[in-house]
Length: 48
Image 1 (cartoon, rainbow, N blue to C red):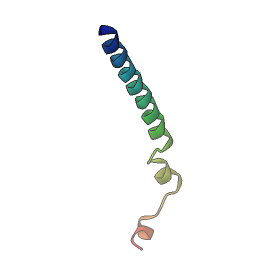
Image 2 (image 1 turned 90 degrees about the vertical axis):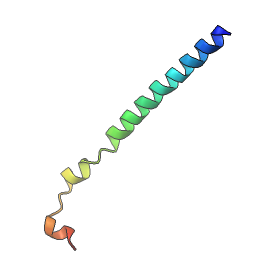
Image 3 (image 1 turned 30 degrees about the horizontal axis):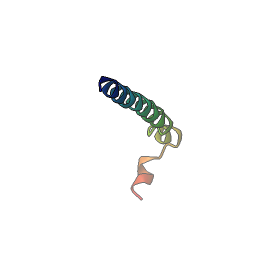
């Protein structure tokens, strides 16, 4: 019975690490500061 608990905990830990890595690289690829840094919009054009 102990082997099932160890296997389950290890599996959940591996899923958590893989999910964390996936989210980390997804956030790096979808950096929200890039559009503002690359395509600067003048403040007078934003009001239109």
